Amino acid sequence: MTGASQMNMTGGSQMNMSGGSQMNLTGGSQINMTGGSQMNTTGGRQMNMSGGSQMNMTGGCQMNMSRGSQMNMTGGSQMNMSEGSQMNMFRGNQMKMSRGIQMNMTGGSQMNMTEESQMNRFRGSQMNMSKGSQMNMSGGSQMNMTGGSQMNMSRGSQMNMTGGSQMNMSEGSQMNMFRGNQMKMSRGIQMNMTGGSQMNMTEESQMNRFRGSQMNMSEGSQMNMSGGSQMNMTGGSQMNMSRGSQMNMTGEVK
Image (tube, rainbow, N blue to C red; front, side, top):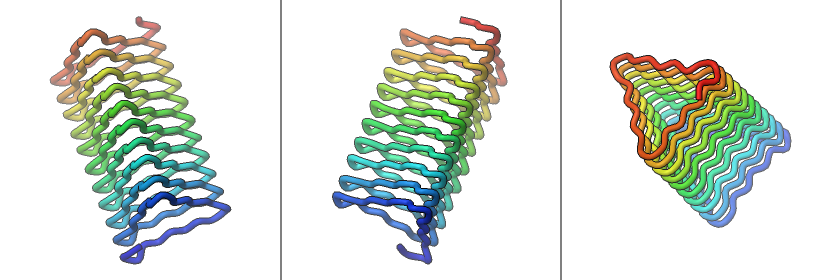
């Protein structure tokens, strides 16, 4: 720990490091663990926090890093986990947070990263998970958020990325998932949101994308799914929305 870094553990919190794990705190970084929170790092894991980054765990949260996982927080990034939230990183996963990133997990949310998945978040991006939301990334999936992008998951929403899927959000794009929505990306899917595009999923809407499908949203396009709508893209389908296009799906559309 260098540069006046600070680590606080209160309320029966627990931190376990084994198998040659490494934790580096530099540049006045801060870790706070309260309310019986638990952090486990095993088998040569690495966690780096620099540039005054801050990590807060409250209300019995749990964070597990195993099998060579790596987590880097730079440039004053902030990560908040509260109300029993859980974050799991397995099998050599990599998570990077830089340039003032903010990540909030509340209401027992769960985030799982398995099989060398990668999550990169840059330039003031924001990710919020609340009320029991769940995000799963497996099979070498990749998620990139740049240019102040925002992702919100609330009310038990679920997002699954499998089979080397890729999701890119740049230039202030916004993705909102509310009320138990479900989004599945599998088998090498690619989703690109650029130019301040917006995607909203409300009222238990469902979006399934399989077999190399591609979805591109650019130049301020907007996509809204509400009322239990369902969208399926299979067999290498391609969907492009550009120049401020708008797509609305409402009222049990299937």
